[in-house]
Length: 331
Image 1 (cartoon, helix red, strand yellow):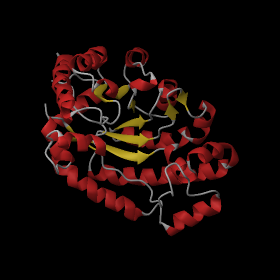
Image 2: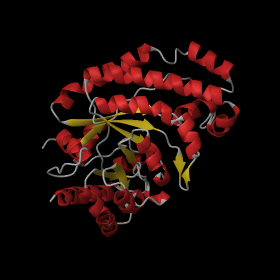
Image 3: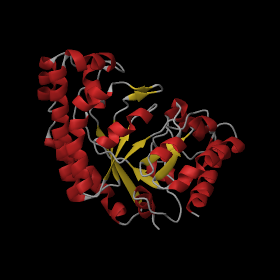
Image 4: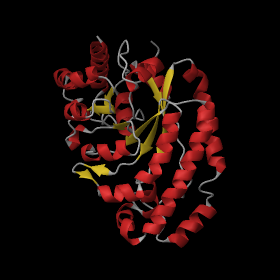
């Protein structure tokens, strides 16, 4: 099987010759790359070259989001009211077709290798919790559900329309393995909003998109860090096929999730915090995950970016065992 065939086999509950070996977030931290370079990693490699160097399957992530000006600081907002929103979307042509056209031109650079099965693709779109947070800022966004419900609904309606235009143009060119929506609406103690707010402000905007995506034979996965366990039925209820990155430090229990949701697509889940603790610890983490790896619908990967505490030698040990267990899971 080629890499794309393996990836699609797992997404659809079929057994591959081995599980895919991917880094779902392969933009390694700059401090991690700096350390590895000092320890012998060849300098100047691009993403594709880096993945080949480590022997990983290529999972690429073309993305497109509405165009917004940068915030003054991390977590700060760029609007306070509807007038601010109107001024920004007019001044920055936020939902312009030009942004989508540039995205499609980028996607076309992947098409030949994707058609040959050499690479898999996940497409990043902003979700309906993530995007208004970029506009309001972290704390004001949480108040906006109560203080500016009409504006919040308008923003998410605009995003839904933009994302649908993206999908319409994307599927004319190729069908990626999945659409991944960035949300991060959970933390280490669970969701950042109630199910009532989710059903009012978020679910209605997902349903048309996931329906259209499913009709085109493409999966939808939701990216939300922290403990997403409570949210799983919320997400599947609005059409999601899977979730990621399943952070171990937030208490995620993959075996329990698999037991309750046998056909839910899972991506991630490997505890990044063990990767600097030697081969025995790295192997023990794979042993913990092996039953889920064998259960289907699971693509193992580091549960977020590999931290700089992990040496180049540590990472090479991880890759060696990754390959061993991806083969073992398929036997």
